[in-house]
Length: 199
Image (cartoon, rainbow, N blue to C red):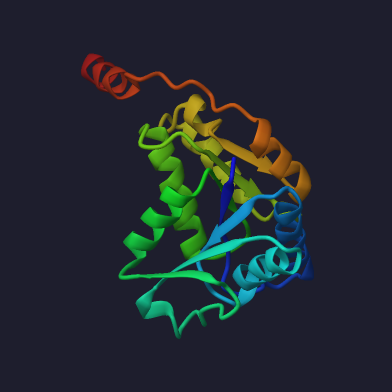
């Protein structure tokens, strides 16, 4: 594993613990010799995790759409800042560059990025680890929703288990370095279609 992609908020959130966890995560990345791939902004948790990696001597790759260069205030301290044409290009490049994904607290964009990369894994479009840094239980209600999707028959348990969860930044990084993705049944879509035809 060489690079970890982080999805997180362009604001700092309401609690100082979010900023502290992002900073600690960035420091741990650099200490482990892992590079950060993220959305390229210098504000919010995005900026905090990038600053922490840089301050600890690590390497950062930022990916930002041209339209957000001003709105998200691009990080001027990153040597490798890649400007792309759209949000779709941003996510595709971040995924291509990364070996694993971590979502930290954030808003709509963070949740959308997390769910999209989980979907890519579910569909077999990529085989990379996806996780959340669950600071102060931030993602608890989302995880409850995922469990509800399983209970209601919209998500297979194997696919629910694709998401790793931890509240400790250093431990989460260690888990990403050692975890093994569950083996997914290749024909689950066909199996679902057959079950619907039999109902």
